[in-house]
Length: 192
Image 1 (cartoon, helix red, strand yellow):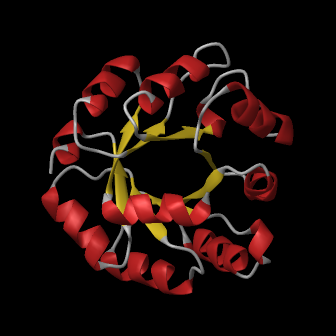
Image 2 (cartoon, rainbow, N blue to C red; image 1 turned 90 degrees about the horizontal axis):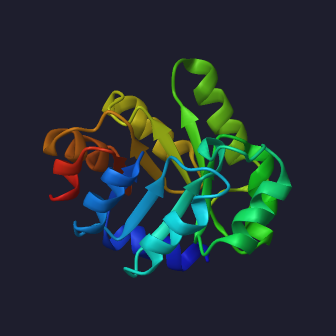
Image 3 (spheres, rainbow, N blue to C red; image 1 turned 120 degrees about the horizontal axis):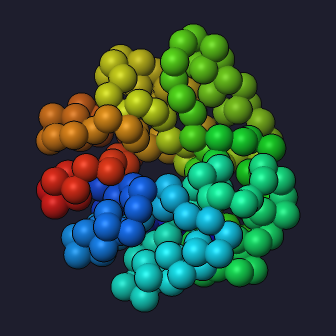
């Protein structure tokens, strides 16, 4: 799944991040090819994913934000067996290997709040291939281009910038700093 997923993101670098059904409906009317699902619960997530898949888009489930799932491998098994999701997003590096072994695309999300986050990104980039995610997502995506560029250079996997991206300048700054894509919940950006 990894290479195919990466190619899809490279071809369409604006990713819709949706937090409710209203935003999902709007994303499905846009031209985005990839949707990050940032809501739902164990009862609704299969239907949310189905809505996305019925339109031919890639559906990535933020595992940490689905109510009723725990930060354990069984949650990955649930997503793989009970939904048609293409992959998962998580802040938990220990889940990446199992998700990859299960055939799911993987995104490891980092909140860059201080230099400790940079150290953690560097440590992750030194992990064995099987423990590497397909991509990492850096939040907030509007961090200094200098810092984002440094992260892109140290990471062994491509970088997505997400969070607080509201306009064309934010998108261009992230892409020019080395991110291969941006994720945003701002519908106006989906239309760019």
